[in-house]
Length: 152
Image (cartoon, one colour):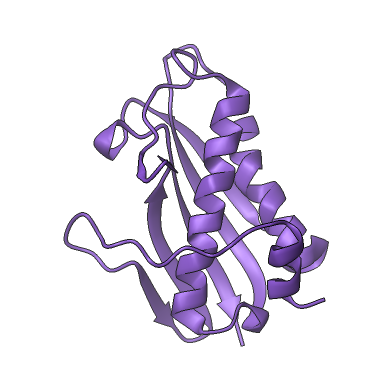
């Protein structure tokens, strides 16, 4: 099954690449690696704001991370032209806007990790990962995730 067939079966339509909010590019390619800049969580077209462990719980954070993964896939598509050229998702780095007592950043980030495995399969979608709790993210967003992929 192609990546696009899988996305369609999941009811996912890839969004266009978002315009950077500062002095950076949405992606950079070097050799067979594509580095995607951090994408913040968005809900209804606006930053999905809040702190995990405060106004937001783990399940909502996980939904936000999944939404970011869809945005990352849209950017990766723009970067390589065909998601079927992805050999492997290499790494995700997740920043979770958290209270000082929140310790489930890894569970929040599963929202993105699980979607990558669903879309690319257990081998290509398996990746290294970091999940950090941070005091704040631009625009007050609840989660920000960046991605590295290997492509053909």
